Amino acid sequence: MRILVTGGAGFLGSHLCDRLLAEGHNVIAMDNLITGSTDNIAHLAGNSRFQFIEQDVTQYIYLKGPLDAILHFASPASPVDYLELPIQTLKVGSLGTHNALGLALAKNARLLLASTSEVYGDPIVHPQPETYWGNVNPIGPRGVYDEAKRFAEAMTMAYHRAHGVDTRIVRIFNTYGPRMRLDDGRVVPNFIGQALRGEPLTIYGDGRQTRSFCFVSDLVDGIYRLLLSDESDPVNIGNPAELTIGQFADVINRQTQNPAGVIYEPLPVDDPKQRQPDITKARTLLGWEPKVPLEQGMAQTIAWFAEKLRVDAIALAA
Image 1 (cartoon, rainbow, N blue to C red):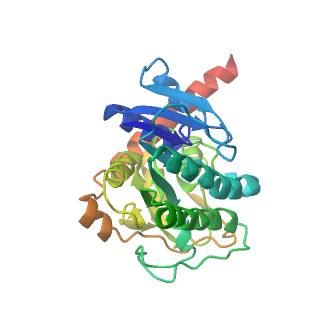
Image 2 (image 1 turned 135 degrees about the horizontal axis):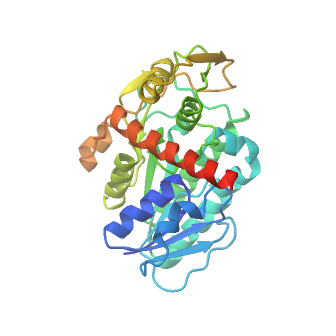
């Protein structure tokens, strides 16, 4: 297939490009580099089946030739990014999704939307199944991301029902792995960066809030299976193995041999107290479940960050 990945120079987008190329497809990555980086796709330079286009998807998208699928992953995705870029986040969720769907309609292409567990907000149902409508504060600081994704889902289903566009929606839960930005504000790079510098890990709140972490290769496998499936309703993809932030901090400090411990800061506004996917649907429809244990995935991620910090330090010294 010939496939467009919006946000293709981002953390998840670049890993998707790798998987799609490995499956034999031709891939176009589109990114305005507002949070993505060409470093993430530099290893693909010279690949005859890969093309990069620097463009903001909130602007009209024109592509020559046939197109079989669009994976719409363009969006700031970390709290630091979407709190600094609230308007851009809302625009890529609305205008960017509209443009991607318009292109899918024009090319008769399948569109897979990257949605998020944040559509569930601070959930009062646990774990979260796809049937749960969520508990979101639409005017809180996190609402710019939550509502952008909820609108994107509504727009995607509208194009599916009104225009017959072949659509898929993946609700992505916390994912980690190489190519995350050290400064993106999410707990994995925050903790790893602090641990590698020998600093205490900053826990917001009392550390009893929960998360579940899925390694990027597992997530990409689930997304690829969803792309090839016949399921048009949303599907959760994530790791149901839940642990507290305090427990997660212990994992990072142990694996990095960091003796500095932890410190506590106030919990940010509307930060969800618990997050765990119900993946019954993914197991049943896609035959998918995560395979990479947390300790193994974290070892790979820590090694990647350690090497990146080493290279950055050499460049700074030069």
